Structure formats: structure tokens, C-alpha cells
Amino acid sequence: MSRLFFLLIIGACYFCGVILSQITIKKIISLKKKFVSSLKGFISDYKSYQDYLFLPLAIIFGLFLGIILYNYFGNKLQVDNYIQMLIAYSTFLVIFHSVYIRDASSMFRERPIISVEFNYSEPDCHKTTIGGKIPVYYIRFRVNNIGKTTIETAEVILEKVKISGKTLTSFLPLNLTWALTEVQLNRGIVNIPQGMFRTIDLIEIEDPAVITPISINLRNSTDPSEELQGQRLNKHINGIGICSVVKPNTFSDILPFGNYIFYLSVSSDNTPPRFLKFSIDYDGKWSDNLNTMFSTYLKIRLLSQSDNKSDIFD
Image (tube, rainbow, N blue to C red; front, side, top):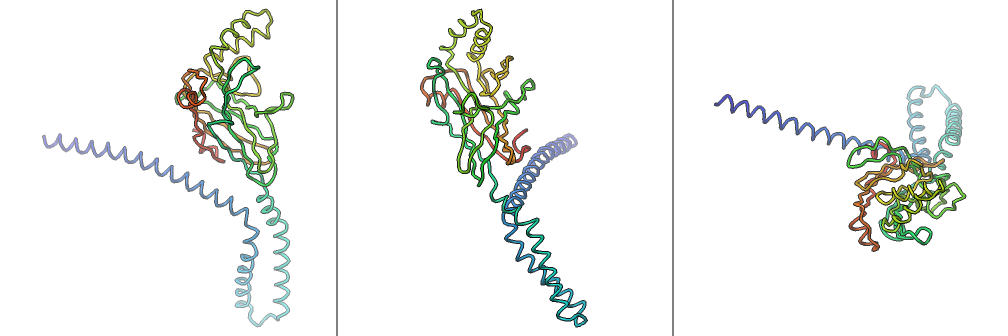
């Protein structure tokens, strides 16, 4: 009996040790990510003021170097020699600062910066009609430029989708459309001036009761383009429409109702990319009341955003 009790104690200790080790490993990984993120933030901040630090650090280093030279040479060198060395050191500092420090810091301070904002309310997310006939909810978010120069050729890509925790392997990345842009322009790319924002269309939900008869009529059409449009509307009856620039004939831009995680990137020609993670949960029910729709049937959150892709994509 005592031996059995002893074995049970050992087993319990082993089991607790395994659990604690897993918790500890997860905490260590979490702390490591926070440390790396903080370190990157410090390095990023350092770039913006390194030209201001250069002069005092150069003076301190020059004094230190002068003390070493004086202790080594002493009175073996004349005052003129020390003056010549000081002139040479100063000339080196001026050239080094002009070539490597000044312009880099100035450009870094004047850079454009992407910031994303999601307001799950009007006017960003709102109800409207397509062609004055089909009621539709558009879900959008803002891409802000909080930097000092224009963000050039910005685009947003839905890179990855998970449904109920599992990666949708059949999904291919899609460029999203910028809201309120002309159809004849490239709707997937815009410039964002300093201090301004542009809204990006994320998803659309169409009223199934309205599009059902329209879909039936179009699918019975002899015109191939109308028939294809009818098939697309039929998908929208039971689906979430992704606001992509290209509408694939495979209808991969329309997802069935469910619980999703969207992984997106916002990038441009002159900024590092910004990565986002959205949760989208839609049960397929429709309400003409916006508050009811957004609070009960269609639930969307911006879970996280980061400049580091590994912090977002899992």
C-alpha cells in the first residue's frame, strides 16, 4: 500500500512538473517576444535622434582619446602636433556626420508611418444600397498616415484566413479595394498624404431576402455574364463577401457564414508593412437595424496589429 502511494505521489509530481514546465516555457517565449519588440522600438527611436547624440558622444570620445595620447606621448609631442590631430579628428567627424548620420536621421524623422484604426460604427461601417436596390452592410477600417511625408502606392492584402481555428488552405491572397475610389482607377493602390487617412473595404454583407429573387432571375438568363452574376449573388445569400479588387470566377472571395480570423498586411513603396489580425463572426442573420446587426449577428474586432509579421501570423 505504501509503495502504491509512493508511486502515485511520484506520478502526480511528474504530471505537475510537465504542466509547470509548459507554462514556464510559454512565459519565457512571451517575455522573449516582448523583449525583442522593446529592443526594436528602442533601435527605431535611436535612429530618429542619433544625429543629436553624435556631437556629445564624439566630444567624450575625443577627450578620452586625447587623454590616452597625452599619457602615451606626454611632452614628446609639441602643442602644434596636438592641434593638427584635433583638426584631423574634427574633419573626420564632420565628413562622417554628413555622409552617414545627418541625412539618415533626417529621412527617418520625415518618413511616412502607417497606423490602422477600426471603428465598428458609422460612418466607417455602415448600411447602404447597391444600385438603389440591394441593401448591404460595408465593413471598413482606416489606414492613417501619422508620419511626415506621403505614403506612396499603399495596398492592403488579405493574406491568410482561418475558420474555426483551422487555416483555410484553399484560400489565395486577395487585394482589397479602397473605399470611395473611381472604378476606372486602380482601386487596389492609393497614396495617403501626411496627416490624412483612407478607408479600405474589408467585407460586405448583402440582404439575402432581396438578392434571392434577383439571383434566380439572373441565373435563368441566356446571357453568360448575367448568369455568372446570378451565381455570384447566389453565393452571397449564404456568404460573407470579401471586398477584393478582383472577383474570381471561382467565388473564392465569398466565404460561408462562420467564425473567421483574417490576417492582413498594409504595405507601400516607402514604408515597412503593417500586419493586422481581425476576428469576424457572422451567423447569417440579417437586420435592417444597424445596432442590432453589429451587436448581435455580425461581430468584428481588430485583435492586434504590429510591424512584426511573426507577432500577428500564427
